[in-house]
Amino acid sequence: MFKENDKWKSFNNLFSFFKQIHRYSDSPDALLRYVGEFAQWYYSLEKVQFVDAHETPSQKASGQIYPIHEDDDHVIGYFKVERARDDVKHAKSYKPLDDFFSVATILIENAFLKTKEKRLLSEIIDIQLRLLDARTKGGEMHSKNVQSLGLSIAGKLGLSLKEMIG
Image (cartoon, rainbow, N blue to C red; front, top):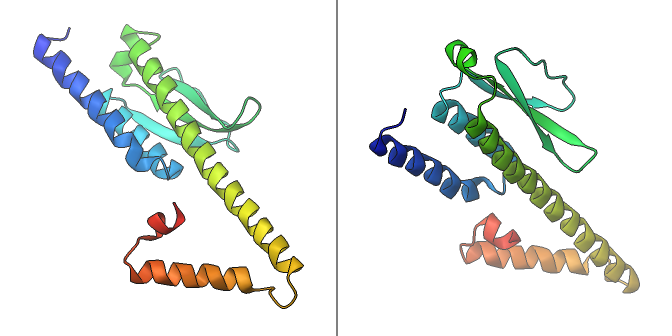
């Protein structure tokens, strides 16, 4: 089993994984790749693949499917995980892997929801600006012009696009 030193290495690897998650919270696609690559390396898996919800996942004897939900009724996709052949012989269920993907899928679901929330907020702001412009005679483009000017000033100040939007 694990030696004491191996336990600390294992803990440190998992800790660094969760520490890095925030880097990908604005990009669900990058987070999907990161989770898959980490899980494949950390758990010595044969293959970890994200399957879009439009495709039907095929579950092999050596594989496990972990769904990623947008809400209770809608699945975004699946992680299809294939363990090494010799690992399958020893255990039908691999609890640490199941626990890892339980947490990881929640993090990914949150990243998708955060992206959706930002898009909806942007759409609400655009609607409000159009309503404001419609009420003002001759001011149809005033809000867009003010927005462009603000972005231009922010660019001159050296702000990144993420800082301008955030």
